[in-house]
Length: 331
Length: 291
Image (cartoon, rainbow over all chains, first blue to last red):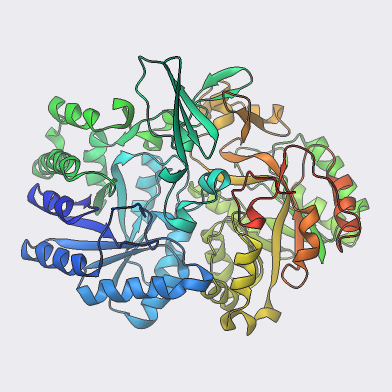
């Protein structure tokens, strides 16, 4: 069971490797990946350095080219594929059928994983991508319950990768247009959700308001911790009641599911957060390395350690974690 | 330019559904999509009921298509999907890639729905090669995006093999989740939802704390708070859009269908009411109403 960690920079990548990641995933410095933020990601020369460093340590480098290509700039996506392959990366993570086609036609030997942005939630969809494009691994969206993950693990022949920790997308990824509804920019079209350029903070009488493109996402009293205005985690009003109609600010944490994920032969555990700092990546990687080693050593004796939870809670949105859709009670 | 009625996205009682489709049969709509696309627990109408309505609509001269579930997770949902695909008579709209896989395996043509991520000419071409006869573009795309996409050689070479359709009226489906937000709004777990969404024929409205309409909750689906309305953009669609989709609303759908027909060539523009938006088509934020 692989530990796959995020890196938005070379220092973050080194932190992940030093603390025990089996593989690291990165994106290029453009709109070809779903964390297209200013100051983040690698250019072509960084990418060669990253490959060198990761291979020196006997680990693997994955590159996410997982947004959907625009009609007028399709070459940017093919150039990203070409650059990644020339740099010698191990795996491409892809969502767009057009980009998958390009790789299958030009680099038939290349290992390709289906990005969570392709939103493959069922055996028929997985088979489709396997047969049409030869993907060997599928990253499952965060909408599946553990029993559904189990059913897929037992019916498909591709490797499965699941999200283990980090920001919780509660919508089926790759099919969520909430961000472009409010701002004109979405994960699919620009590689960002609730983009920072549209965020505004206002304080009045001690109450802090967060807005996204002018829409009031939340109001925080002085004693409350204010979170980033990701629009699905706002407090809104339904029939006179103000609450989080979609989801609270919280992070996904599947530590408690590790023995079960291991038992079902899940190939890889993905940590979300290419936008996070090297220090964050270091801490998170350390915890998950220890947890995975404990499961691999003896899954029957596995117990979540309090100090792991303490570290993870400190790194979580609103200091809260959930196992999300993996458990039916969340739904 | 043809007009279609999309699948009813809300959970309506059987009698309301049957009445709606009697009106559809009597209307001058060209194409009708039938089927449950949001939640597999909604069983007021089963596939056989939809097929009975489909036959009546066909006899009334409508082209009927079956529209499939968007978020497919459970094996039971895949079995139901296969029943839709095996109907033997009607063209199927695939709202998940899994449905495309099933239809292709059976050698059947298909419509790619708006929730299939198709953003460029190469994806369109690939799907046409697999049997796509109609493409409903993702709701977040604009006229400029569509025009650019259709101008490329990959597509112009096969343009006679598929139609384009645009979602042009109604609350837009923007997201699907494992969680049922309508049940959550009533403090119920999804497993004990008691199909409470049947009480909300237009979904449940979500406002910001300062009173702006933001979203509509419709079970596991989140819709746009405002209603999409491209009636005044119809004249710009000629040559790009073959079919214009109206998504059934609890009230007034057929009045709007008539208004759309009347303004197909720009002869009867309408001043958009507050709460109607057109931003996406104009390459703006979806929630924007541009005069």
